[in-house]
Length: 114
Length: 116
Image (cartoon, rainbow over all chains, first blue to last red; front, side, top):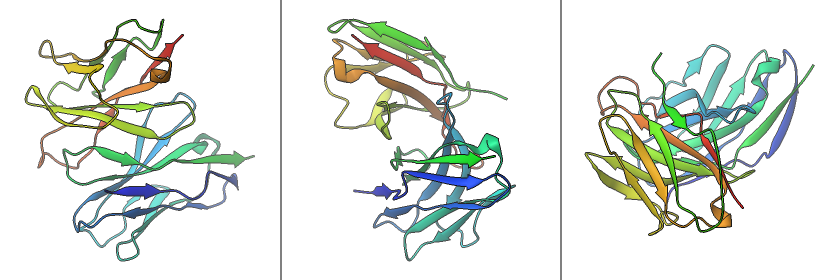
């Protein structure tokens, strides 16, 4: 069974600084999807960034980028120029197929220090 | 921008009562999901639904749970006899057909279920 592991329950970063959230996963498949979701205090799940495993290029979305290491089964999220609005719980997630369930990690709570 | 909606936002019920959580997926989506998140824990998959039948269900989704798409717009989760441990945030999600652009499951804002 596929699993997603986030080893950092909490992290803090100074406003305007850069922070990296770690994630590892386990799968025997070669094609799959990886995601980072943000959950602010409102508890709405918001997709931050997506990576298709067949793509070698790391995904980027404005200040958010990933470091996808397929052989190491690692998928970290880098947030540049951290802003107060980035404070939230971040979940790393995996999906086997486009219509398949999403498997979430336990999350990393990110605090932004002013 | 189209969005998934869920009602109610908060439901309080007594143990043993039946509850129905409602979701309106994005109108042209065909895959529907329910997830739950017990407070302070990770989001867990409950069930997926496509073409008017369950595609996959987790171990959590036992006989007390059922899903239905009663009309062309609503997608419901019913818990027949609620237990204290059913207290959680329940998220509905929907997605488009494979091949229709970038893949994303769109999540609703959630329904907080409190069982007393």
